Image (tube, rainbow, N blue to C red; front, top):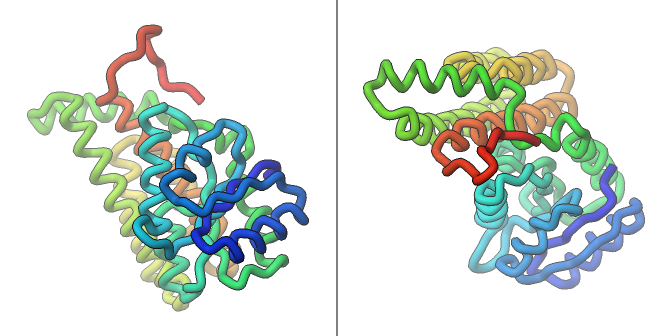
Length: 261
């Protein structure tokens, strides 16, 4: 259930329209027209959704998403769902935003029915299962890092840091390619990219991520709504795997941190 939303848009008129539609759909809404100031607002614990304009001066939507995720990582907080709102609605644009970690892609001018469908998709990310910061495969991933780091002749911390960067970069690239091919009807090539992502997930011991890859692969033939939703869930699990890997290079908290929800 989406109850509290933040609308970030440098155009006050556009922000007002989006806020009005979200309120009509039952959300409590706060509007921010300054992207930099909005980052802190978006990190509040009770925020269920961030509606983020992509094309803004100084910081674009991808920059803002990156800042939000960086602060969440520092605070060891779960990821808040961020919805891209943009006038660019080509398939390539949709693939880029979803692969980057946006929970939905809504075109401008924003239509009520499209916004309602997007909220239904985003709601899945606010369930108990998807509010977790770390992968359920944490123990297997940590064990795999230890094994692989010894084989690579590096310290576990150095290896984990490099592995997290690789998984993030390659995972996002493969998902974007898979989405582009799925949109164009090239199901076989889309499945090939996902197969490569399965290989990465298997290498780090991420069984849940493999399951999401298979779900996306199975949804390709069911149409864009189906595979887009699976892609969003896949990317969310990819983020949890990355957080689990990065946790290996963070200092231990005074209480002896054990990654948790």
